Image (cartoon, rainbow, N blue to C red):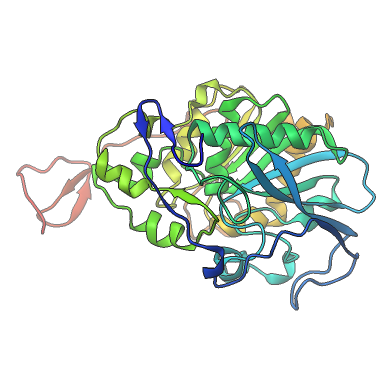
Length: 397
């Protein structure tokens, strides 16, 4: 990939100028490679929980990519810790500063502020939790975001190669045990499909929490109807960089039908064989279908699916869910014999809002073998849905 031209096969990809860092409502910090220690018991901001251990943050680690581009990451680890597995969070939402980290924290959804530390970034795990249990977290601004070099690209082979390079760099550092995993929600989950398809040797597992994998069918052209409002207004408008962004909206206008450009953005999940902990919900307007189908299509035999009935951001930071995921990571990244393999491969919430406690069921497959599938028909004449096919054709306005 060059600075001026990005090609997918014979297709030249349209680019647009990045939103400059100076326009960020909440400033993006200047590059400053240094280390800072947050002492045990300290509070990042009023209302957040005290830190459970001394946490060192190494800021702005320079990470080289194969084409000479440099991206930057912040590493969080327990101070003085021996080499540990690293959880990679590869983000376009800024590792520090920026709109998403300030305006869309998990606590804005009603999640209790005293259950997180305030060190966490948008849609990513809380370093305070993971550092106390023998993991490090590295949050990396992807290509073209903030001070990371190059032009921002969305998914596809280029993104997969970038993450491959980041993972292999981290695995060689003295703070890493040689095992790297990935974790994150939404966009931070989507990139995991692409990264795992690239097969970096030191990627030991993935944990995508609600992440689509088909940009065309599930984001900008759902149901064959072009609609880039979410992509342009809710995402791109709040990303910042020094160079250019891939212009997906212009590409949709130019190539409204599936072609090599759009196919490049669809990870081939049958090629992924590493362990995976996949999370979905029943109600997400964007991610539900591909999270569940992603689990089904994964080539790995070591794969687990949990379908919840709560909000995506709070689910990520709920302690019982973090404890469950840690058991998975401990087994596959630390080799701990903790009985994880006995965990049902599918656990799914029942949408019974009157249930006081147990809303989860389990199965070895999805769909669950006990599922009773029924065909339902829409009747536009009276706005109903039933098991009987309407006798007459009707339309609704």
